[in-house]
Each structure stands twice: as C-alpha cells, then as structure tokens.
Amino acid sequence: MALTTLDPITALIVIDLQSGLMGWPFAHPIGDIVARAAALGAAFRRHGLPVALVNVDGSSPGRTEQAPRQGNPIGNPIGNPFGGPLPDGWTDLIPELDRQPGDIVVTKRTRGAFASTDLESLLRARGVTQVVIAGVATAGGVESTARQAYEAGFNVTLAIDAMTDARSHAHEYSIEHVFPRLGETGSTQAIIDLVERTNSHELA
Image (cartoon, rainbow, N blue to C red; front, side, top):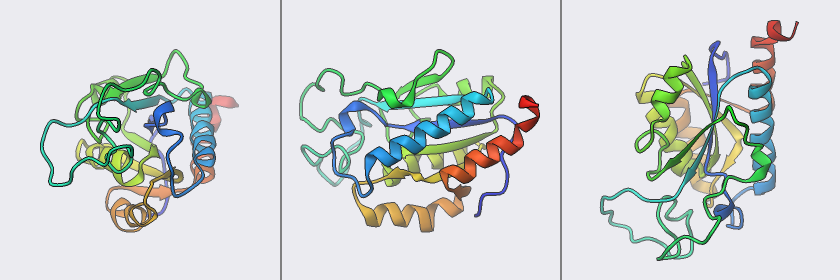
C-alpha cells in the first residue's frame, strides 16, 4: 500500500540500532540506514511527535528447529550471538540516534518490540494511533514489530529505505510481500515530507 496519510499523533519506532549490531554484514550500508533513521527521529521530535528507541538484549524462551548461528546475531537476531555474557556496550543505542530525554526507550527480549515490553501502553498513554517503523533487521525485529503493531490496532507505516537485513532476499520479501498486508510503505524523505505537511500549522 502506498504512503497516503499520517494520523495526528504518529510515533516513530526505531528497532535495534545498537552498538553490538553495527559491525555485522548487512545487505545495505548501515551508515545510510542510520542516517535515515536519525533524520526521521529529528523530524518527529521537531513536531513534538513521540520517538521510541528499541534495543535487544535477550531471546524468547521457546525452542526452534534452527540452532542459533554463533557469531551472527542477524541469523539469530534476538539471541546471544556469543554464547555467553554480552560484551560491555553491546546494547547501547548508537549516538547518531540523538536520544533525547523525552524519547521512549525500551529493551526487548523477543523479536518484536511489543511482546516483552510496555511499549504499547507507553504509546497509548501519549495518544498514539499510528507508528512508523525503521531499523534492523527487516525480516526480524522490524517485521515482527510491524505485525504486533498491526494486531494491536495501530496504523502502520514502514520506512523501507531506513531498514536492512543480513539477507537481501529476506529484506526484499518482507517489503514486497509482507509489509503491504500490514500497512503503508514509503521512503524516508516521503515520510518526512508527510510529517511536515501534516504538522505545518504548528510551525506557522
């Protein structure tokens, strides 16, 4: 579904842009993804819209058929990739996100950002009815968060050039086949333009 509108109170959710994942091989240059996510954050804050920054430091308790891929947290995006304690700073949000005192910050232990956190209640308390999602990995944390947001009744928009995955085919499959069933998709610039148009009266 093409990008058409944003609700008056729309929140940005940035998934897993944290220090421990920045050195891993992604399908797209991570610097570009970070820059676009940061631009979205700046636009949302400029108009007083909520920004939620999410990191991950654990895994779901259930068994899966596929064993964790040691040393690759994108192959096993919510587990401990090192088989032991996480290194110091691994969960730190990257400074480029420019975390502000008013931001919502949650730590998840599942793929999606809603299942193991109080994110939904924090958004509801701010009157949020729509979310824009960016971050990593496209077919992991981003897709799971989008599914959970959709099922919770939020309108969903996905910033498709502000996300990536270690697997290019998984990234493309989510964008082409999954996301259109969950909400609207658009580029970072298109979303920023829509934020500006929707909230232009505030700057008048």
